[in-house]
Amino acid sequence: MRLEVLPVTGIGDVSPGDDLAALIAGAAPWLRDGDVLVVTSKIVSKAEGQLVDVPAEGPERAAARDEVLAAETARRVATRGQTRIVQTHHGFVMASAGIDASNVDRQRLVLLPKDPDASARALRAALRERHGVDVAVVVSDTMGRPWRNGLTDVALGAAGIAPVRDHRGETDPYGNELHITQMAVVDELAAASELVKGKTDQVPVAVVRGYLSRPGDDGPGAVTLVREAAADMFSLGTAEARAAGLREAALLPLDPPAAEEPAEPAAVERAIAAVAGVVAPGTVFTHVPGEGVRATPPRSTDAATLVRFGTDLHRLRAALAAEGAASLPVRPVLPG
Image (cartoon, rainbow, N blue to C red; front, side, top):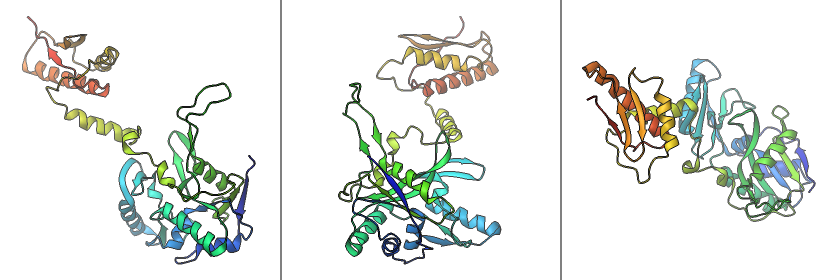
């Protein structure tokens, strides 16, 4: 496979109500059937009127932006200083809900398209029906990535192209069957296109040629790349996850229901080791397989000691919960 990535220049500024298909077809009369058209979401939003008026400067601007961010946020994921990582109503997790103040009048903010997949389908249909060219369309935007510095473009919407290339069930050259390899090709095409679009060159559209011989139907769209909450192992930032864990630990029942399966001994030992350095002097927790975890408090049983021992028990319950063994019984063994 040989790919070409071609910039589409000369589109100019886009305003609400503009015919985006006509602007692109006029700037790129060389479009061919089978091309993948990668369009920056910002010009889609501008054409669709996804703009909000805000003060040009001062605290009023910051307050207005916070209000807009709150309206665009479905769930807050992490906050560090002025940075807000949130989940939008589309399901995207990104900084500031994708709200953009660049390449737009100072008194306006650009929101994401309401439905990027629908925008991609509409643009594709307009190019096919009014301009006689059958292309796939990817609507792209810029995101950061967990554990990686730097930004890259990804697909928010797609039409005419399968968003994922699924290699599961295939065999590699060494005879190994692939089990989990699913490539997000629309993200890869979006990232490649950004190399010729740039952020300050006013080139909001690029064409990737050579990936498709011909587009398919509109397909499921880029929404299929949004990971469902049940499968999201990293749904919160570190500090937020820690705070959630502390809240859950505070609500642990004093007498939890018995587990259906015995706790893994190594998990119990890790929990005991985790609290060993913070429990009161003389408190020792021991894992007794088959009989639960017994606790041996100090020999003194005055009120203060019992309070400290109760705190130690709660610490152990929280540590066991973190290891998935919250239902393990914890029974004190008093002296004598």
